[in-house]
Length: 79
Image (cartoon, rainbow, N blue to C red; front, side):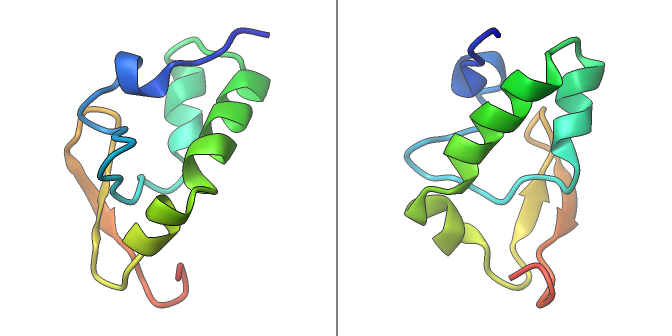
């Protein structure tokens, strides 16, 4: 399976230094863009399990789509 370099592919969405919450079901956007589901899940798992990403999941924080545009907010249930 391919390795996805998320920050290189979508720099406005993925930031290892200052992560922001991702759009819900963003994995389907990546699959629709032509990436393998297994590779997408692996890459997102690595990105989203990091403590800095987990800290970014605050109620009311803006979620981002692949192009860095607002795509919802984090709810209390999400946290």
